[in-house]
Amino acid sequence: MDKMKLAVLFSGGKDSTYAAWLAKKYGYDLTCLISIQSENKESFMFHVPSISQVKIQAERMNVPLILQKTKGEKEIELKDMEKAIKQAIKDYGVGGIVTGAVESVYQASRVQEICNRLGIECFNPLWQKDQWELMEDLMKEKFEVIVVGVFAYPFDESWLGRKVDKKLLGELRKIHEELKINPAGEGGEFETLVLKCPLFDRGLKIKEREDIGEGHSWRMEVTLE
Image (cartoon, rainbow, N blue to C red; front, side, top):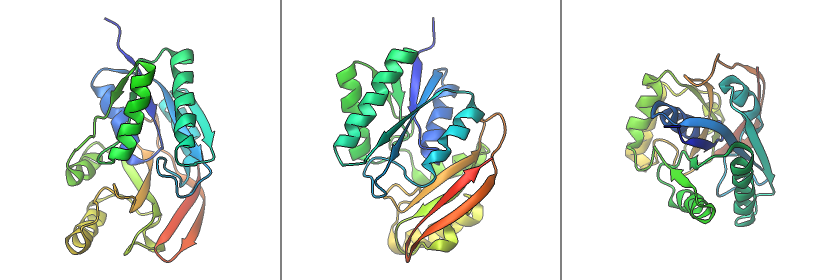
C-alpha cells in the first residue's frame, strides 16, 4: 500500500518542524512543504520572524517548498494559503496537510475548513499535547531550537537567539507560575526557529543577524548557512 502524500504547513519553527518529523515517523510521505510569507508583522495565522529562511531549511530536508506570499490581511491570507494548498495537490498529488497547531482553535479550524473544501485530510499531531511535554520532547529528539521573536511581558531582547534547553525551560516555569504564560509560546508570547533536527541532513548556523523591536516586542531576522 502506498504511503499517503502529505504537505506540511511549515514555518521553520519548532511546532511545524516537529509535526513534520512525527508525520514521517508515523510512516507518511512528506511530499512538499508549504510556507506562507506574510507582509503583516501582526499576522493572526502565520509565523513572521526569519520566515525567509524556510528555503534553506527545505534544502536540508531535501523536500520541495511552495513559498506563497501574502499581504497578511486577516481573511485574505487564508485564500492565499488555500491557493498554495491547491498547488500542492496539483503539483505533488498530496492527500493531506500536516499542521503544528497545539492549542490555537483559530488556526486549526481555518486549515480544517480549507481541507474539507478541497477533499483532503488534515493532520494535527501536536493537537492538545501538554506544552511542557512538547518542549521536553524537542530536546529528547535532538532538536536545536532558538528563540527568534518575543511579543509579551516579561520577555525582552535578551531572549533572542537563546536555545530551548533545560535552563530556558526552568526560567519559563518560573514565569508560568507567576503569569500563567503558555510554556510553548502558544499565546504568541514567543516564536522559534529550528537549526538542527532529525529531518535535516546537516545542521544550520547563523551567518547574519539583526534584532528589531523595542520593550517587550522583538524579532530576530537571520541569514542561515
